[in-house]
Image 1 (cartoon, rainbow, N blue to C red):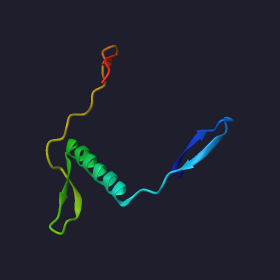
Image 2 (cartoon, rainbow, N blue to C red):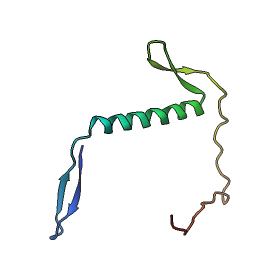
Image 3 (cartoon, rainbow, N blue to C red):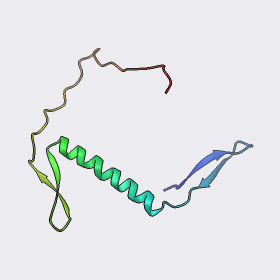
Length: 87
């Protein structure tokens, strides 16, 4: 796994610039964001994370209503909103 970036030098050669290792705060931030996203996904699919009295988390199946299955957009009706405004 690369922890850095390649950049072309003046001669056009690729030079690798290493990044410092992540800090504990960096890892914590990623873990917290990932946990929040996972909880939203599980909730959307009727599978919530439940915390036990001793602080452990587990997935409990069958909580909440199950969402309807996704429907494909009819041909020609999928539109993208594009804006040229800045900001």
